[in-house]
Length: 303
Image 1 (cartoon, rainbow, N blue to C red):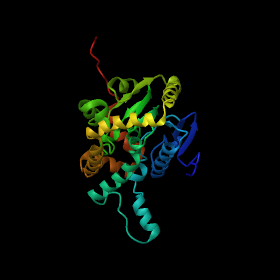
Image 2 (cartoon, rainbow, N blue to C red):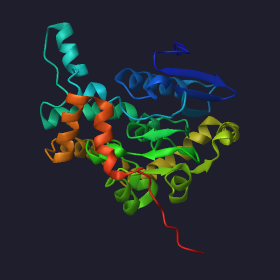
Image 3 (cartoon, rainbow, N blue to C red):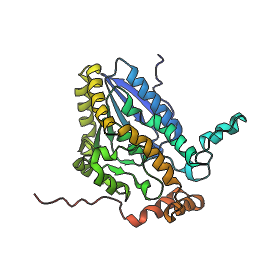
Image 4 (tube, rainbow, N blue to C red):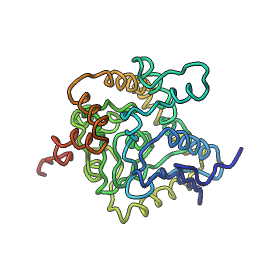
C-alpha cells in the first residue's frame, strides 16, 4: 500500500496518535468543492480506513470555513464539464455531458455521489469539525460523517435550494425529521451552530475558540477503542439507517436533483442568466437578497 501524499492540491492528510486529520485545503476559495477535491478526499478517506495506525478520522476545513459548497463558476459560466473535456482531449469516443439529458445528469450526479457518500461506507468513524460556513455541498460532506461538532457561530444550510436544485446527498431527514428537513430545504435558510445542535442537525456546538479542544478530546477518547469495535458500532447503527431507507434515498436524492435542474421557473432561470451576464457574486446576491440574513429564527417555547 502506497503512502498517501501529505499534501495534494486540495487536501492535507496527517496522522497522529491514532487519529487521521483530513483537511479541505482551498482556504482562498472558502474550500469550495471541485472535481479534484472530491477525488483527493475519496483517496484520503480510503487511505485512513486502510491504515492500522488510524482508529478515528477528523474531517475539517482550512482557513475561515469548513466548506462553502460547490465551486459554481464552472457549472454556470459555460466552462466545459469534465466529460466534455475528456472527449476533447482524447478525440475518441464521446462522453456523457453534464446535463444533456435527464439521465446524463443523473449519471453524473450518481458518479459523484459514489465518492461523496464514502464517509458513510468506510469502517472508521468520522467526526466533522465545522466552523465558519458549512453550506450546500459542504453539508453533503458533513452530514455523511458519523458525528458533527460545530462552532456556535458556524453557519450551516443549503441556500442553493432557493434556485439551483435539491441536495444530491440527503441525510437531512435522518438528523432532524421531516418537518425541519422541509423547513430548511424549502427556504434555503441557515442555522447557527447553536440552533443546529438544538434540533439535532449536529451533535454539539461549542464556542469557536474551544472547537479544537472539544473535537480533539472526542477523537482521542474514541481512538482508545479498538478499530474493530468502532467499526462494529458504526456499521450496526448504519444498518439501522439503511433499514430506514438511507441508501435508497441517496439514489432518489440524485434523481430529484437532476429533476430540479430541469426547472424553467423564474428564479432558476434568473440565476443562470445572472451568472452568464454578471458573474457569481451578483447571481448569489439576487438569489438570496429576498431572504434577508437567511438565518432561521427559532421561537423556542417558554419553559
